[in-house]
Amino acid sequence: MVVEFCQIYQDKATMEHTVIPAIEALDRKDMEGARNLLRIALQVLLVRAVNTVILASDDMLGSFASG
Image 1 (cartoon, helix red, strand yellow):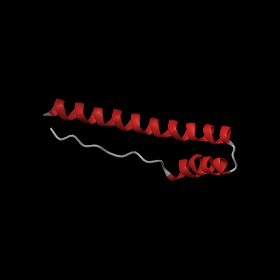
Image 2 (cartoon, one colour):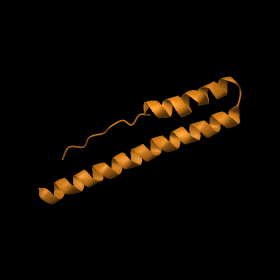
Image 3 (cartoon, helix red, strand yellow):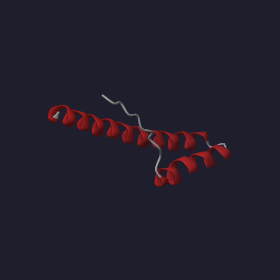
């Protein structure tokens, strides 16, 4: 059995709409705005990671059933 790990990155749209504005908010000392934007970015990243795990587990179940 081969175990593979993948890295999950933010996509371009998430970076443009949450991460970069969060850094700009930090520069303006807007801690609440930065915190909210970083929470959104983290939630998007976590959802993508969970979806990747679900898809991988479906693939593993399919390979076990066929083989």
